[in-house]
Structure formats: C-alpha cells, structure tokens
Amino acid sequence: MGFAGHSTSTDAPVHDLCHDRCVTAAEAARAERLALSDLLLSVGPDAPTLCGGWTTRDLTAHLVIREGRPDAALGILGGPLAGHTDSVQSTTAQRPWSALVATVRSGPPRLSVFSLPGMDGTANLLEFAIHHEDVRRATEGWEPRVLPAGEQAAIWSRLGTVSKLLVRRSPVGVVLQRADSGQRIVAKKGEPSVTLVGDPLELLLRLYGRRQCRVEIVGDPEAVARFESAKFGV
Image 1 (cartoon, helix red, strand yellow):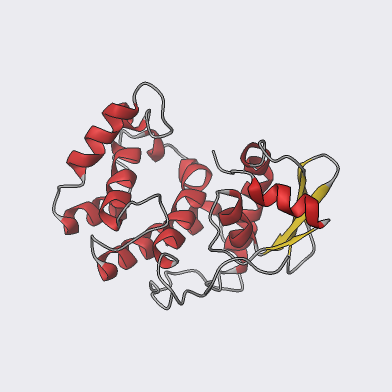
Image 2: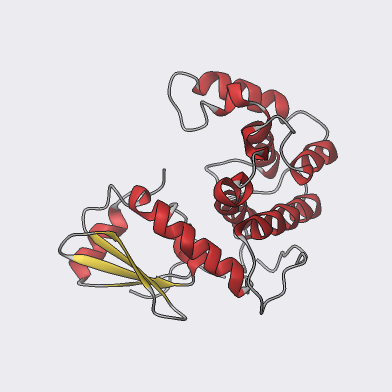
C-alpha cells in the first residue's frame, strides 16, 4: 500500500535544535512545546485539529489541564471522571486565548508531576509532537517537517517503549521500520504481519490513529486490510 495522507504549509518556527547534533528527549519536548505555542497563536483559537472535532482552543485547554489540574487529568482517557474532565476543560477553554497559550508555553506548574526531573522528555515529547501535527495537518496542503536527527532518534526510542501498547488491538503482527536506517521494532508478534515503513514521527502518528501521515504499509493485501480496519491509540 502506498503512503497515507496528503501533504500544511502552516508551520511554526524552528526552536534551537541543530539538525546535526544529538538532542535529549527533554530538549526535543521543549522545542515542540514552543513551536506548538507559536503555531497556536498564528492560527488562532478556532482553527481545526485532528482531535475528534476539537478546535485549537479545545486542544489548548486540554494541554493546560493535563499539566495543571491533576483532578481533571484523571478523566482524560475516559472512565467515571470523564464528566468532570469535560467540565473543567470547557471552563478552562473560556480563558483569554493569549493567556491559554502562554500557560502552555510556560510549562507545567512547579508542583505538577510534569515538573519532576526527567518527566518532560518521558511524558511530553510524544504528547507535544503529536498535537503539533494535529494542528499542522488539519488543513489541506500539509507537508511533513524535517526534524533534527536527534529528535527523530528520541521519538524512535520512545516508540520502542509505547508501540506494544498502541498496537495491542491489531489483528495481525506489526513491525515498525525506520525509512532512513532500516532499524526495526517488533511491536506485536504474530502471523500474518505487516511492516510499517516511515520516519519515526510518521510512525508515531499512525500508531496514535492519525491517518494524515506518510507511512508505507507492507505485507499481504489481506493482512494490510485487517491492519487498516483496526483502531489504534491508548
């Protein structure tokens, strides 16, 4: 099967990441946070996203409560607290747009769990990379960003940890393969299997259920069809 998705000319500025040096996951997470904040201000509060009907205002409110309202964050993935989460997010979204974005840009509150050493790279790199693309790719004409090699490597490393969870519902085996180096991760053992080929960020987006990505799916046509019919994500 060929590459999925189309290609946004809407881009955020590049922040302090040299393309030919190693970067830590925390540095990459910080760069994604800043770039997303710039993009949010650029497109405004009513722009579309890839997040199930959310506008950029909804997405930004989600990011704010995720880091700053642990009582509401507990219901982000559903469950008995989902109603409380929705209520807090709705209230948070009514804050002035510039203040909402400034809260995201400034990072988590000092007493937030996300302020603990190491948490930025561990918990925020994938979150901000995905949501950055959720804004970029919600309009026609998007093109993949050229990320620093160090950021792609950091995403690839995290994929080794989270991919098994993300593809647990796949009806076929799943192998991830970097398009540039050929490195592989067996995300789910099984036969038949499919191989997803792409850059780490593109593979990440596909495993989180985004179809607006550049991923080649290689395998028997029936296995590919079964993979494509499955739902992915946390």
